[in-house]
Length: 63
Image (spheres, rainbow, N blue to C red):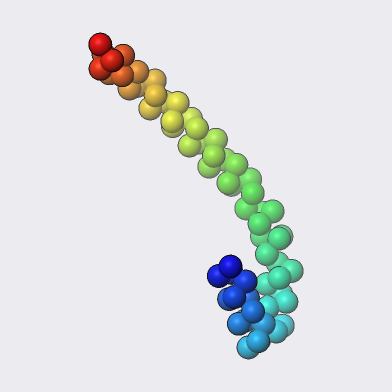
């Protein structure tokens, strides 16, 4: 909702810049998508390593 309000304010004050932002936003989002996917994969690998490292203490704490 805040993005919409900020865009409307920008549209009111400088409509060419608002239209440029409206056109470039999906392109930039598509360019950044691979970096998000790599971030999700790296987070998953780190979570797996953490679970493997903490497995002995988890097993011992359950007894």
